[in-house]
Image (tube, rainbow, N blue to C red; front, side, top):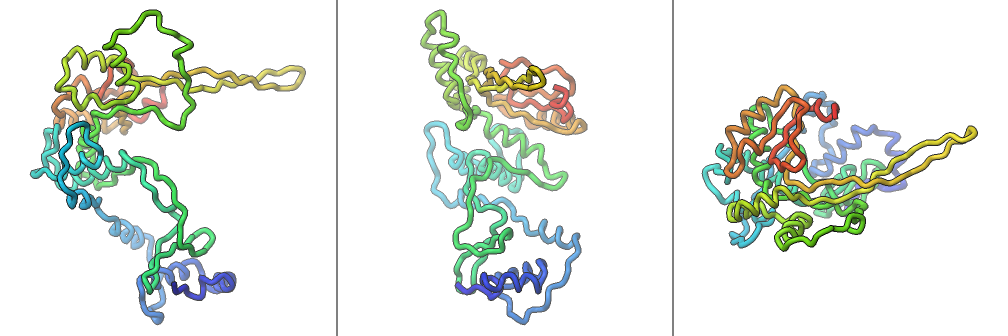
Length: 337
């Protein structure tokens, strides 16, 4: 691998004293693009030009890898990859369950968002910049210590992302389609929290029936029973809706006591109950509540009635046991709670 002289350790200090950071970045970019050594000296770009260049370099979501795979026949609940492949194979912008047709770019955005929500990818830390040398060797430049490495630092990227489409391109419809795409999923118990088993604290007084045991097992293991809700008897669906899974986490409470000028702190642990639900909480600006309400009515999907959508601007919230599909609140509502 050919490394320029300014990347060598013994020359770093003298080089950094002779050229500024901007020229350093310019030379790195020039070398990465394999430009000649007598290339024109870099020129300062305005902030507006830099922003336009960055915005123009953002690529559209790439989901072509799903189209190159062989069709998958799913007998049970499809995985995220299988569900994305099925959606991309459909023609005419038809999105299962949503009454409004989606444009191709909207469908790609929905699939990419679902991919980001379903799995956590291993990515390179932001301050490591990838470069390819003139001999096609890969290396990474660390912008913090100005060193060059063959293996960068990697971390698990958080799930989710930012939908940054321009105004008027249907971001609300894209989000509603994403909710529809994942409406059969139920949140799972996090693996990184300290759980508390309340079985021995509050033992059951009566033996549970087989139906109750099955419902509790489905709820506690976050099984996607809603995917088969249309084929289940209504009493079973009602029982599963009214019996969400739950878990308990420790909630530390601190109290300060003053004794003879000395302060002592007493910590006590209480257990907070959290419910597992497939509902989607949407926090929007107050002036956009009507837009979400209108879009939800127009794009209301099969199997989701208006009773499943709660879009309110007041302090009244639905019952905890009423498992809604969408709960939309203004930005000021959580701060008042």
